[in-house]
Length: 592
Image 1: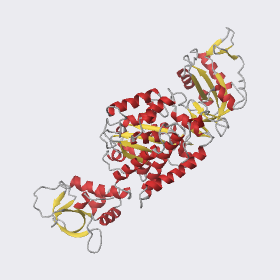
Image 2 (image 1 turned 90 degrees about the vertical axis):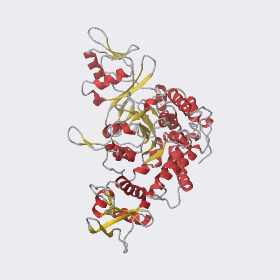
Image 3 (image 1 turned 60 degrees about the vertical axis):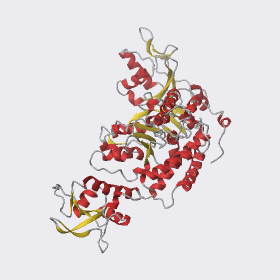
Image 4 (image 1 turned 30 degrees about the vertical axis):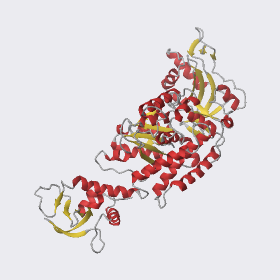
């Protein structure tokens, strides 16, 4: 990593661009729009000549540009106005929305504080104006937030350096969005200082800066899931991360269908998506929805004409929280669903409790208790928000490719330092993903956004990775741990109710028998499971042969004298039959 930049290095970085800055960036004076006959714009607003005198059609607004996408489709018009409180608004109106009665367009204008005449013929006149007005300036229309041709589009503004075409967001979230801003960067940094030494808070704030770096570094989408009981501070970390891009309402809920979350994810492209309260999501959709978010591609659908419609796409990083893990929630519908392959490293499940007796926190920064620290963070995040993320992007402009190259080097360094020797591919990918989060935090620190010392982000990521590695049982394949746990869970659940003692000493009637059990001369227990039960119940969703081979390797399954996984045994009521004999050792020991 290069030496940290000073505030002076970025003293000349401009703020978000308004009308004058847009004109300046285009290197020419604002051209005059050409109005349809009979229309004129005054200080009062848009007027239309009529036999009865000028009719007041709408409040005053400026026509900035005509819009179209890269394929010369999605033509529209970009306008700007101020509401009655003097707050600026910008809206790119797709002209296709004017094909009907224009109700959706009027709704967006009124919602943004612009007067629109309630008279029917005036509303029609406004549609006519927006359809016919022309101006000799073009802007690139995009339907999702994020990077486009070197500019970064947000629903209400574009962050750009003026070297290319003006890029504007043109979609349904143009006014109804959560990318709001308030306060100052310095005020937000006071909150961010409270994260120092608190690994979970540090990693959450670092994750908030990953989104704009994903494409440039060639990284996959994915997320972090904070798991733990209520009232330990999970929501505090989510609110802190949300304040990077917007107000507390930037935190969304898991309570949605897969289809609904697709639209939400598209609006978090190249950015951050935060989803709270996993328990609100239907367990039957938990695994598939989480993987869909990480994968970045929605379902293909047909248009009204029956033709294939382009699927929604996004590249985002998300933060999630819940009392249990995503895998546990997916299995809670009773169908024994397993997480899709690769989900474990695309979506990190980490323990929210830092293990210091302070819930999420490692240190209190001289505050009396965790509640006081949580309140301080939430209060600051509710006063200063939506500034750090856009300013981070602003300071990346012109240097994104160089920064991405440095981040890739940093990820290699992180993996070389913290990845265990002999780690599986899954663990290696997990380590590199946390390296990306760490490097995002280090770059945000270097650019003067995060008010931390160098390597604060790296230290937190290393701590999180070590905890994650310990929780999964080591650096071996996750499928091995899952298989061992599944067999152990089956025997633990049914050991007394469905396993018949081999000696016949227990008079308990066994219904729906799953197998037999017997004591060894060493005082331990062995469980004899018929082949059909092994295949259909114990190893449901797994490869029975692979599970047997794994248990033999770990010393939990006793093969026959020829090395076969199943043994010939004589059991009450069955005579000689083949059984898989599982040792009691499966309930303990190191299965890393």
